[in-house]
Image (cartoon, rainbow, N blue to C red; front, side, top):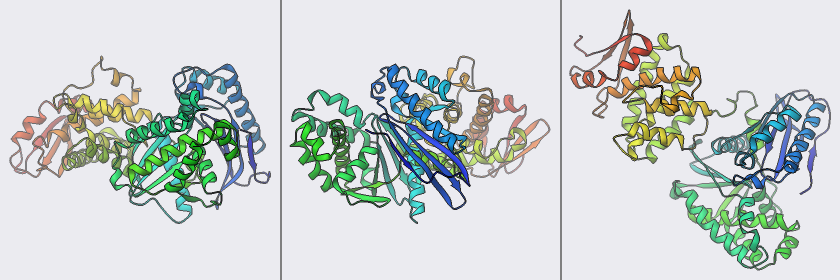
Length: 519
């Protein structure tokens, strides 16, 4: 692969110049952009080839490969200086994230260039692809409708996202990438077994990837990635639009034709080197089986990349890295409740009561809208651990959250919602609870405050009938009075007796629940 640099006239930017860098498995890519009132304008689009495939299975990146990455980023920094760019976000994906010495590369890049290279997880990748696609469709006067599956096929892995009514509600990071597959089957690439094995492997991978998704209700599949775009150019060389359909029938004809060719003949047919041609086969195979499983007769290929999502985070009004708004993260929480067979009506009522307590005790905790959203998220999902085991459901909820991709939260926020949900019952945080102790100082305080609120909300619906929906909190000297519009609350008072202790210790107030008739 040759270095590619696409330049727009080199003149001093009149707007705000920014840069985004994506250190992927097969290339370091950068987008230098001027953000103007009439929209972003590309200054330079830079692609520098690298090969980080050795890091995909926990291997070590060689010093030579590290030098190539540093050289690529050094060149990008020189271009940035020519435009006076100071604001930059640089991320690394699976090639760095999975390597055993990725931290060494990150430190060497920082020392040589001053660039902080951030390894991001699959959930953040999914959010970035979603953001880039959303910005593209918005610019075309459209938006994501119904339930759409967004699939990015990279060199090191595949990132999936489910978008429901415009919101990213589920994401996952799968170990299926074109470079990863190529390396696994490279020993048979000169035989007829290469394409057949890739096809069968892709079938199993697609089934595994999509088993957790509502494939019967997916209305559109958006497929992205450098090899996907190259595949589109092979099958539909006339395609030039911002979002182009790639028919499954066309993919099948192309794939079958490639299967009959030798390794060298495939490269000649594709007009590229042998490795580049072979990387197209895993991309085609996985798209074919995704179409088959979802029942779609085409995939839609947008002209977007990870860099477009990175850029979207830098535009005016954006929430920034790792963030989705309240509506998005609560949609994710509801999807988790449904996925793990929870009672959504019960979960919604618990979250509503927790939100009411939060709002009416703001003078005690002084927390803001983001913390309220985290409390609502934890309140919605607090019971999903019952899917594994009812008796230890609070711990199993924490386990599920720790091992689930959740887009739109920072790593610290994700740890916090897990701990808030974990402490909705049983013990309060203890010195030997490692998950709580790894939180930062502020994180520990916020978890204690929000978990103590959730414990009270949880206690007010122990029979799970939602008989209490509205409440009023009065903060008086030494006490928090919680007034409910029910006369018979003996069960609730009994349930809250051992749950309120955490609130009382956290805020220094005695908690009393008062019925409609008074004390």
